[in-house]
Picture 1 (cartoon, rainbow, N blue to C red):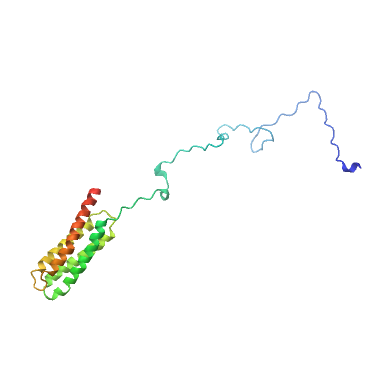
Picture 2: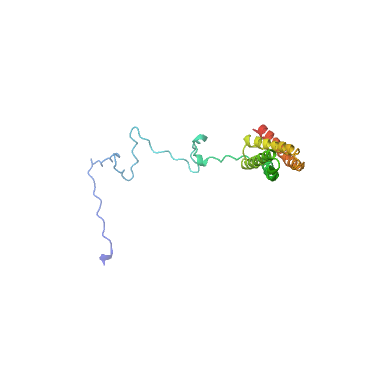
Length: 197
């Protein structure tokens, strides 16, 4: 019957009257502190344990200066808006160039000098119209001044073509109707871009 009961532990031994228990050793080196002992103070020159923040409060950090942000995290710079003046003058300039090119083609058999002037005006207007469309977000003055200059040159060449019997007044009327909007619209756009800059 007694085999089902656990064995009884031995009775505690009584210590002699003058016995002092050994004092616990302080934490040294890589030894782990014993259970129930407080952690030893940090040696001179080392940081103590960080203080705990009260529950619910976040630690406060100083923000970085703006110039130290990584470039991929910087807000993207806004692109300038497309200029409607450049788009309109570019499209009309290309149309003016094609009409002047049509006028110059058959004129080489009758008056080569006037036909050459019309050809130069045509190629200049087509090129400056394309440049205006490409630089529609730009603010440089090179392409607008070139477009205004070639539109005026087309007017001059078509005015000179009136004296040649082959051309008559038809090229001049077409060029006036197409070159005047280019000159007026691009001049307005150029003045607004200059004032806005």
